[in-house]
Every structure is written in structure tokens, then in C-alpha cells.
Length: 289
Image 1 (tube, rainbow, N blue to C red):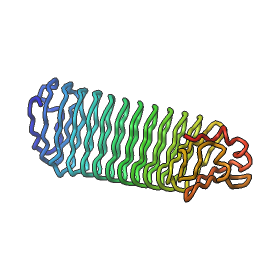
Image 2 (cartoon, one colour; image 1 turned 90 degrees about the horizontal axis):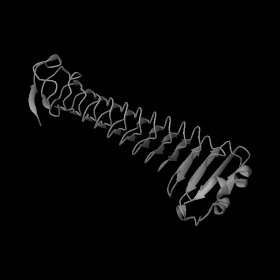
Image 3 (cartoon, helix red, strand yellow; image 1 turned 90 degrees about the vertical axis):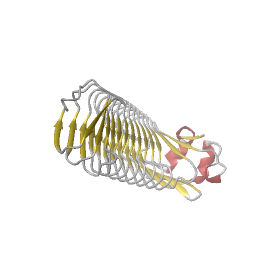
């Protein structure tokens, strides 16, 4: 664990000059008004505020640092290393900095930014705002109505529970709404969108996008389906007997302005795609998996 430093005073603590910056140190925070700046340190430090009920601010150095928050509204900023940030309770602001970071917001309405690197972000409970930043990131909103932004890179975004909004950004992203009435936006790239359970709104954006549906998917709407996109249905979805694309024709209705595929209690509505056009391209636009 390295050298031990107990931070018990109040007010700004800038650098802690009495602790050499190249050590792997353990800092136990047990007081209010702590502003711990380790930006000049190169060691891999542990900052432990789990027992603290006050707000804590920590700026990490260039090592592989771990920051553990308590029940206050904490602000943690990672540095150049592969950092681990755990907000725990409270409405926390967590940013990973450079490096491939692991960030978990814990309970509360958290703001989480992965920044550069291939980051893994968990919102947990609460309505969280999460941004993967640069890199190929993995985001999981957890419980609550979350806003998840992949930003740059080929990201994997999972809304989990709640009515979530998922936005892929640049890159070829995988978006999965999970449970709840979600809104999924692929943006740029060849994206895969899975609404999951609930009544979801899907828009692939630019690129050749894939919309995937399994049994019990709800009443979903695809806002921007084009000839470059595909709909993938699981075989025998909702016990329908569907085994190939041609089997889908019997479930199609609509007019010149929209198409609806109703399978059992669930439906897919394609805005701006006429029924006749859809049936004409059925075998190229639909795939049974």
C-alpha cells in the first residue's frame, strides 16, 4: 500500500510537499473541505474517502491512482494513468483523464466523463450523465433515467434499467437500451441498435445500421430507416414461426408513409418507409438470425 498519509485538516491542500511525489501513497480523508492536488505526483496513489460524509475534491497525478468517495458530493479528476474512480453515495463529478480508466458513480445523480483512453463507466443508481470521450469505451447506466454519450471511438453502451437516452457519436457503436422506454441514436458509423424491453425510439444516423429485435421487444419506432440499414429478427420471435425474411410479409401493414411490423403484442414502426417499398425490399432489408 506504500506510505500512509492521513489528511485530517480543512481547506486547500496543494501538493502535500512533505510527501515525495514519486511514492505510492495511501491517503485517508476524514474531514471537510478537502482539496487534494496530486497533479505533480508520479506514484500510484490510493485516496480513500469512503468513511467521509463531506464533499471531497481530488486531482490525481500521472500514476495509476484509485479514488474512493464517501457520501458527499465528490469531485475526482484522474490523470495520465489507468485510474479507478468510485464515487459511492452523493452527486459526484468524476473524470478519468488520459489512460484506460474504470469509473463507477455509485448512488446519486453523477456526472461521469471517461476522457481519453478505452474506459469502462458504470452509472449505478441515480439519473446519471455519462460521456465516454475518446477511445473505445463501455458504458452502463445502471438504474435511473440516464444520458449516455459514446463520443469518439467504437463504443458499447448499455442503458440497463430506466428510461435512458443513448447516443453513439463517432464510430461503429453497439447500443442496447435494456429495460425501459429508451431513445437510441447511433449517429456516425455503422451502428447496432437494440432497444431491449420497453417502447423505444431508434435512429441509426449516418452509416449502414443494424436494428436487432428479440421476443418481447415492445412497441418500437425507427425514425430514419434507409436502404443501407437492416432489421434483424430472432428466429421464431414471439413464437411467430418466422424462420426467414419472407415469413415477415404476413405481419406487415401500413401505407405509403410508414410500415408497421406487428408480431404478437409487439410492433416495429418504420417512419417514412412505405409498405409497398418495404415488401419489395423485404429479403434485403430483413434478416432472421
